[in-house]
Image 1 (cartoon, rainbow, N blue to C red):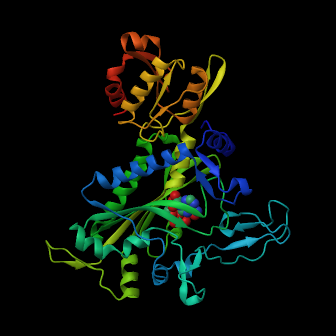
Image 2 (image 1 turned 135 degrees about the vertical axis):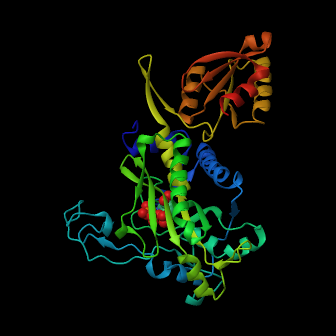
Image 3 (image 1 turned 180 degrees about the vertical axis):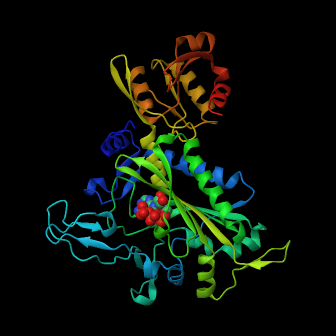
Length: 432
Ligand code: ATP
């Protein structure tokens, strides 16, 4: 573990334009964060990698983008209106609030004050649809994307021609009025989820549950998270929701300890059956091969885009001794790196600038690239190391003579001289 505390990553994220506090010039707003130029690329790459690996390269998955505001009955059917609340306690002295299930002491750790009795706190944000603010117009910001998938199950099966087993995937914003947000972007009140509902025959559910647990665990490893910082934690039977047959969390070793990145659950046929009851519609599935009619079971791998991005940021961070100096470097997997290649010119002389611009124009057709000219070459490398750019290319006077360029590798810091015409091929090979 190279990160000693969250502050190291919060500072780097701000200094290099990954993540800023929201509304900063107005003093900020608790637990809201804005992704800056490199942060938005990093998070988009996380979401793109998830979509590509789980949806577009598979024949048994389709995508969906359902709305954030939905019929309030959905939240009655899902149980969110009645159950979606965390018990909480307040310190009677200093008024700090804690989740009752997070504390294992009798007195407030801040001031030693007494706690109130635990109270329920509904986590859904409420608002009104239309101009009249009364209870008949109350709607909720969705607290998860999953329900949008369940209520579209029939639409998708009849239009996509997919046959069970198959999955529906969705990426989108969710909102929870969390009692104790914090740890940077780990727990916020507005966040993005990446969710899959995988529908299968009840008899196959245990098999698919095993499959998705392994597959989702491996995904984080494939994208560069070190295995020693990951664990798959199976829930004990007393931790399971009453309808769930199994649940496991992929956990990451954050600076504050192991915590959930993603949950994978066997939710049985609970959700579809609830929506059948509340909507009065038949959501069962007729297998066209066997003519068997049943309500499918669902395996749900449910991940957070912001939490995953935070884990990738933390895990990428390294401090290395180089010639008596310490360099900090973000060793992102190349698929996630916000910039794959930075193009420099040695000096601001016009013929070098022209050549550098031409090389940038070519390379940016294939990779996320940056043309960057401020500061000495040493300073530019340090900046690109902290952004996590795998390759830096420098154009110098020899380039004008023999068309060669210097290419520097982020991880080994080795430099190679190659022909500029082979640059795109070179990068493709290195980052395949
Ligand atoms: P936790 O116990 O941490 O509150 P949860 O078990 O309630 O999480 P789920 O409902 O399973 O979370 O949501 C699935 C995923 O969505 C989580 O694994 C996490 O990555 C993400 N997520 C949930 N709540 C938040 C939040 N408040 N901020 C950021 N991401 C979140």
